[in-house]
Amino acid sequence: MTTIETVQGPENLRGLTPSQLRALTRDIRRLLVDEVTRTGGHLGPCLGVVELTIALHRVFESPKDRIMWDTGHQTYVHKMLTGRAGDFKSLRQPGGLSGYPSRAESEHDVIENSHASTVVSYADGLAKAYALQGVDDRAVVAVIGDGALTGGMAWEGLNNLAAAPDRPVVVVLNDNTRSYAPTVGGIAAHLAALRSGEHRGPSMFENMGLSYVGPVDGHDLAALEETLRHASGLGGPVVVHCLTEKGRGHEPAEQDEADRFHAVRPRPAAPELPQAGALPAAPASPVVPAGPVWTDVFSTELAELGTRRQDLVAITAAMLAPTGLTEFAERFPDRTFDVGIAEQHAVTSAAGLALGGWHPVVALYATFLNRAFDQMLLDVALHRAPVTFVLDRAGVTGDDGASHNGMWDLSLFQLVPGLRVAAPRDAATLRRALGEAVAVQDGPTALRFPKGTTGPDIPAVDTLAGMDVLRRAGSRSRDVLLVSVGPMAGICLEAADRLAEHGFGVTVVDPRWITPVPTALVELGMQHDLVATVEDNGLAGGSGAAIARALADAGARTPTRTFGVPQRFLDHGRREDILVASGLTGRNIARVVVEALAGREDTVRIEELAAREPVGADR
Image 1 (cartoon, helix red, strand yellow):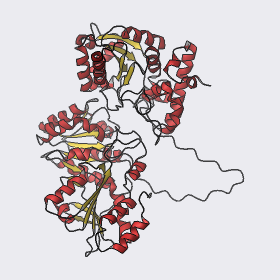
Image 2 (cartoon, helix red, strand yellow; image 1 turned 135 degrees about the horizontal axis):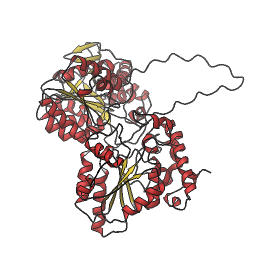
Image 3 (cartoon, helix red, strand yellow; image 1 turned 90 degrees about the vertical axis):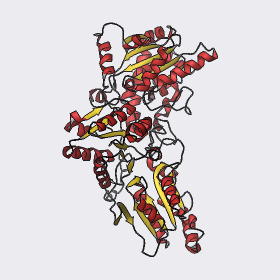
Image 4 (cartoon, one colour; image 1 turned 120 degrees about the vertical axis):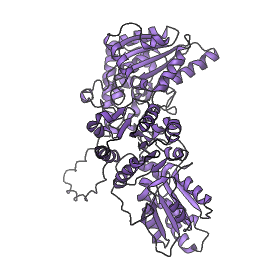
């Protein structure tokens, strides 16, 4: 039995000898590498906090003491030490262990955040709650990375903690000099001076009125425990500065200067070996290429546009490579700005650049734009600033779970006056939309695309007022208009095929630019008996709702059906499986459309199709 197998909870840690603790750190790192490289997930951040997590659970008594983690992607070790080590084979798998803290999994998981810079505010509020209740025997611990200190909300929390010198909160600063990428800005420079011992005088934390302890070696268990015990006895807010190494203990990660194995993809399954005497397998069918990765298509096209457009600048929030800006940055370093984990600053800074005559391209994950909605609305759109937002990981992202699904953007976009939004369906339309977006000079634009590969290009059979017609019914058949939003084109075409097999006339149109709703789309919808919209955004207030409202405002009596993602926080799982569970399949769309047309004189066709396309059938 390995040492990690003997740890069923934090209480088992406190009786371990130094040699057993060393064995435990080895076991944990071995388990991390073995399982995370198999399932995919955040490896580098977790390798770097092994000793720190052990020390926290030996000094503090979770769950009575509340240990909270900023961002949450570095909590795999915390999960192992709180009784979940045996569950790691199911990490990030449907129905299995979440890749982030999960209150449903364990009482030791206090919060479920995966957006950075929030934990100090959580800790401030929780400590206030205990003070109001007269509770003085529970510690509140907030673990935050140096990268998250580039986010303004972290300083809002620290500012409020500093105003309450008797509020006992331990802020553990996990300083590994990077978030996804190396930490940027004046904070990074100050922490570097503290690490090296070159800084003279009080730290910035002490100047704010907080106690400061450190720096301490974050891989020295004895030193960590001594420091944490000292900090917890100070009776007020204190910052404990721990120096750790991202990717620690795994040589490939330690040598990786790009992101220290921040996140790894699942390891391909080994091929099964044939049994002795078995006949050789038949040759495999040719594999149709899935197409390039959406991010790579954007990356290459933006770099090419940057060559032709000297006014283009690119902005990211600590995610240069994941959002596809690396190639642009290599070609145009002076026109590329990484502002750290500060989406709000990124957007308002872009507005300033636009006022100065540049055209900024702000590249973010769709889920992180939520944090900068006010800036998009009032700092960009109100000023009609020509800023282009490029949102990666839009729609359902899958295995990262509820907080990473980019299923809110199309709903939020409906609220922004003057914003034009494109949803490309494939690589070709992404290139086209990006060129069109950066050509707009009288207001903001946005384009969004999902995680993964683009699939093959889907050509249009016709165009209508700037919209792409992907399938056109016979001139006399005006049964159904299917409106495809972005990557839903393939599903819409499958639904059209199923309906056409049973005699229904179906036209499939991809507006490409979906916000505001094109006038031509409304006119086309009024010529049909039913309009159905399909998107991978939340159903509430999305593109489908906007199209239905536009039809109603035009006086149309055409009924509509909207297909999208259920308006709830979705459990982690594969994108494909979540789309199926959400009813976003050609089979289900065809069935619902048939039921919606059931009042017409097509009873025979309707009953036949409904019988053959039962509810809940897979694709």
